[in-house]
Length: 535
Image 1 (cartoon, helix red, strand yellow):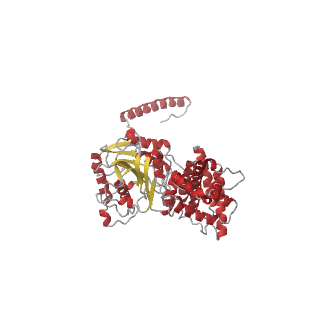
Image 2 (cartoon, one colour):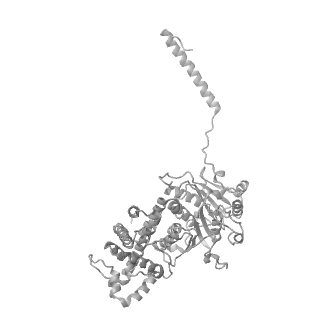
Image 3 (cartoon, helix red, strand yellow):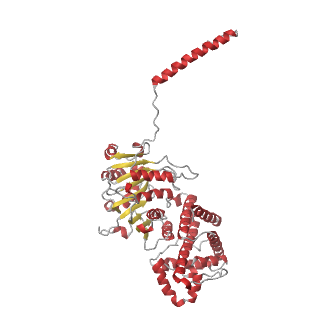
């Protein structure tokens, strides 16, 4: 499917969302729309695999027969269903009963079946608890099919759902059912909902252009990025993963076969569910990722609290876009937390360094971490200055990248990317000032592919360019009291042209002489005409 077709599909789905949501706000409707896309993906994938598995036994129905072929097979082969589902669990890692498949749901919607709502409720529960080997409890918890926002009574709600499902089915019918198509549409819609609903949605969405920069950086060789991409990443972590787009972008950079296990954590229940759906929508098996619903700062995920060094989670790549300057409540016990005790606690007013230290703890010796943070972390004093100083003295901060303002849906402030490593080869810090390199957009500024390439290649080859990038020695950084404010090291001011005063004076004298000559000639003409000469 071409990029143009992908955009067209996304645009059609977005226009449907805009048309159908009525009085419902974008955040509420998002959950219905994305859940139906998810069900469509699971169903298409399952039916394709089932057709392959059953071969010539897969029912060939006439074009006028609206039944699901799999429903027909289940009905005619009741004794073989258990063995068939065992095979499907081995091959696609999940099963869906025919009555809960998207094709069955869409047919119920088309015929205005009065049991659609009840069937959807049962279907969602089935997928959460029975479809997969590992349960996905609460996957659809944010979708209230009994909500009055859908209608005042059951009949009205059922009718509204019939309309929504039918419209989506019609919109999707003209496009391919390739596995990555719906994943791309899902990502597109998340971006559109984020743009449409401002700060609340923007908190969980990292724009693709920034996501691409981070993922390209962490997939390069850690010790010598100029050598190119790593062959494999065994473990990847995003501890504030939102809808999971950053993790998926890392996977996309190396290819699915070159990524081992993906770990994500998300505090917001809605976006936690979006992330789990997003992983599955992009063809990941439930055994290939773990997404945890919890708070990274309090570190309530058992897998991250393993004290045995041999079992400690160590990741080849850590990426994150945590909430900016988030207020938190560290206590005395936290000061002894294994993540913070060597550096100290971030201040209550801004948890930026707490997030950074959390992720950095789980970075492997040969790994790369890239994190998006507000510029304040580069120069603020107090506890943040002490943390920053130790990270610099320990030679862990590799690169500081300044990005343009207004790239995010949730904030217009310019942000920075910090690249950290535990075993850093270079004894300087690379500064990249990309703040003036962007394309102005209607709502947000945009980084084009050329802008992104320039940032990544500057990092990869450690290039220096006047007014854009510079390698700064630790001695110079120490002279600046470990302040990392980019403008201290890279001046963006245009150098004023040197003025040659002698040449200017010579020009002025020549001009004066010319004026005198012209005046004499002019007065001569005036005298011939009998007019008064100029003084």
